[in-house]
Image 1 (cartoon, one colour):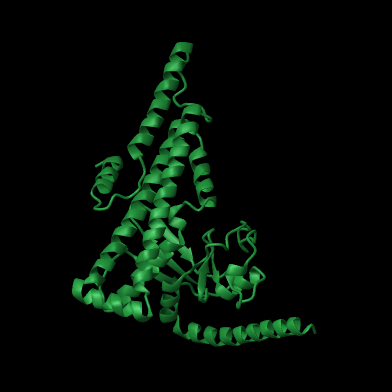
Image 2: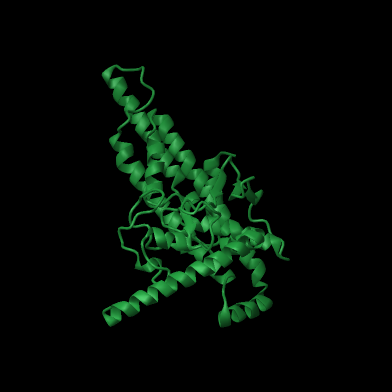
Length: 321
């Protein structure tokens, strides 16, 4: 079965109508572009060119804007649904007991797992669709503009495989598989470690897609502790992110200047909307218990010192000392 037909059947088979790629429509744009260009060549007496030009007004004016809009809708839907799912799983306090009671009545835990599986499938099949249509564009135009567009999409945070919520769902899967609940969201999804104690989340996905998320903080060069993801997708320890942005842990990342840059990629405005990776935090605390205990002690001492310095400076400012 061709991927286009497989993709359409998948999207049409969803109970809830979800945003997706107009895969067939985008292919028609490329086909029309090629046929129109060949017709013009035939009129001009040219027969040796088999692709339309690198800068095509038909494709560049219709294809990319349509794809950009659809990709944005897919990523927004994925992020929103993943956030809602993980909030249910990590609920605490009185809300936790309400959800637990509902789960007993409705077998809601199984529903939670199934929704996770469906959400992952939705993300991955759309990632494959995007990759295939961009590859088709480059083939038709004999160019690398499809790959350039992919880089542009990454800079606009609409590349679905770079979403921090995908990292959270991978951690969610491993946390569930280590509990009494048996589930399979991914095949071959693991927390791996090299000989130097550096950790990463790896996952072999269908259609040759591989996700490999490095869990080393690029500031302290240790495995991330109390991890936070900036909107550019890079992951840091919470304290490291605060120090890099020149804010105290008392004020937190909400106090960061709007134009503050990512310490790694130097992209600006990435702290607003930063995400605390709670599922990943739980996974690392269970899987790296010795490292976690040692880091917890060190972090506690550092936080107390930072808090003390913060309030000392506030008191001095208040007294005018």
